[in-house]
Amino acid sequence: MVLSAAGAVGCVLWGVGPYPPLYAETAMAALSLLFAAAWIVSSRRAPRRKSYWPRRGPASTRPFRDTAGDGGEYGGRVLVWFVALLVPLATLASLAVAFMVTPEYGRETARLDAAGWGEHPATVVRLAGDPVRRQDDSDGPVYHQTDVVLRIPYDDGPREVTKRAMTTRSAPKAGATIRLYYAPGDPRPDSPVLTDGRRQRPGLAGLNFYLLLGLVLTVPPAAILKGALDWDMTPRVRRFRPVVHLPALGILVLGLLLLLPTALAWQPAGPAAFLSCFTPGAALAWVWRTA
Image 1 (cartoon, rainbow, N blue to C red):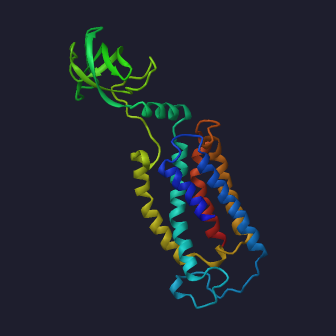
Image 2: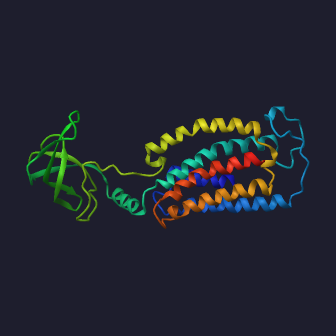
């Protein structure tokens, strides 16, 4: 159950699915729910054993007892580490899905990448208008906007493309070589040609700066959460209790349902997808409060 959830979170953060629909991530999340249901059934059918652990306190202060029924001290520490890491990462993964690119943008990015999208040289054939000198504010840099005709060396032969209001630092001249973003292998006549063509790519595989920053920011909460859970994680968390685990499971299912339309490309991300970011922490808070 925990490993399936961790797999779904890891796939989202790494960017295994470049754009919706996220079939692999959705399947692993559904699998974790099936494992949770199986755990509930097996826990209900398992014989109950009396626990002699105090309700609170670090593991080192708890008296010895027979641990055959719930995995023992090692199993408890592993659970604490999983929960402490998975809750912040699941929150970050929900946020990543909520900000994920649309299917149309993702398909266009994949098509351009396959055609060699990047920064390549192009030649200015002639100017289609006079350069216009601009400056956004008194302290800002000076730049020029010019309508130009470019010769771009595509793989199927050079093409002349008119670029309207192309922005350059200095006024362009006929015969000059400039660098633009385009895909040399794209055969479409309307293939994009941009001065700044950096495209958003999901996950750590695309080295998304904001996701990297979020991942770094999850380390302190995970460390604090680990210390708190190590002190207060009781065996009752690992033994199914309806009042503890059913509401927490319901909160997690609600979070998945809020993300499902975005993850399966049924509709763009909206406020509901952002609300799912709060469900991992809310589920843990419920378990912590009631167990």
